[in-house]
Image (tube, rainbow, N blue to C red; front, side, top):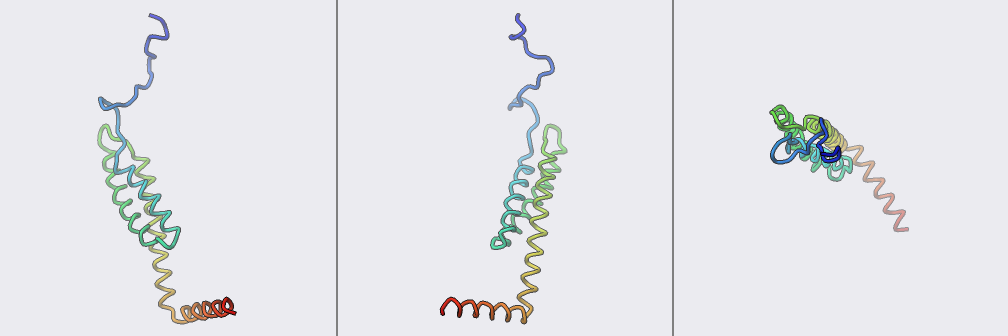
Length: 126
């Protein structure tokens, strides 16, 4: 037997269906929902969608953390990343919703905005 035909000692074997650890699907999806939720919230137009995606991401991250504690299941770091991003999406979505509702309930601010829009409309028409 030559050295090239012998398997290396201590070499990592590829994880296949027969064995090896699997990454938790819930952890992976929590990361995906966290990124999507954060990007949606940052657009401000899709903030409500981002808030919903963030909530789903937080739930999936918690499930992913619990699943990563099982033998043969990995993904703790992915679940933590998903939890952080989803949490940011939820916090920013709530802050944006609170800011918008505060602005809409302030009659003077709405009147100033309406006056500016009217002024801009008049400038465009003339």
